[in-house]
Length: 387
Image (cartoon, rainbow, N blue to C red; front, top):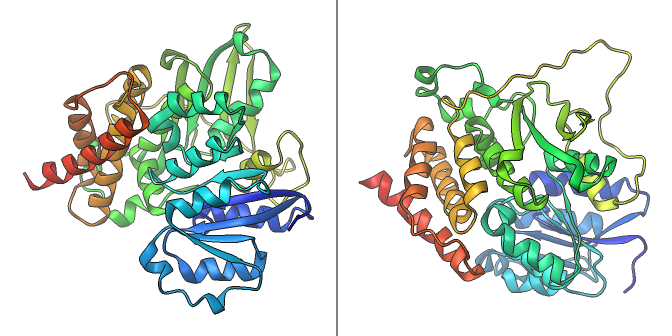
């Protein structure tokens, strides 16, 4: 079945990025079409999305949840696939033009990898793909002549600013960060942070894991690593500035001193739409700056003592190898433990640092090595907690 417009596989369609992407697709006037929708175990919402968008395939990566589905409930013409194999089958189909990799965490790496192996363009919202296996992912994209377009608002801003000059003319990348809900708290106050407080982000509406990462600034650490591989730029040319308004999404400084910034309200629909329609632009549904109103934009350097995750991000961006997989795996496990009340907020970064510094570093891992180190780091967090 041939569909009009650009056919998109939305991996992680029930998550925050996926839901925003479907809103973009619904309002694209036929420019975009949702041909694949995937979820891990949110079967009810996935079925609702299937009824509304009538994709060619839906994929549930949790086999147990998939076993609960009565296939008579599927809309006519919609096929059900299961597991990582189902994602690989769907994204590699000739009908698919672009894959939105929006599965949260390390689980998203497999979908990104399958899409690139099939030579598909990838709209990358899963930063862990590059954090864990940046050199491998970028090498695969080059070998398969596959385009990666970033979806993270910061990397989308840099990607857009890059079009103002040549890559050789770039002096530095400046990633902006809201600072999260605790940017003005002291170290003593941070020690008392509750789960509810950490989940209350001042500007962005995100899932719990990403929201906690924003509170620790680990999200920015991971974005440093992502930028290092995505734009092939050394860690010493990547800076971070705290920008509470979240209007300037990042900046690019060229060798002549010119700084190019991308501005818009904090609404993920804009970078999603830009990635899905690149290199074209269309009128969309994202929020816009109201230039009739007065505004001010504040910037300040981050406090590395209070937010030690940033140092870890710079260190991993410099080291490469297995360090990214270890940091990411340790952080995912530590955040889960914090959300479950088994680990304090101020322990998240120290446990990640400890495991990173004591792992068996390999400068040139294979994909299998990366995945193995991810599993090892998660187990080490559990051991650290119970020790």
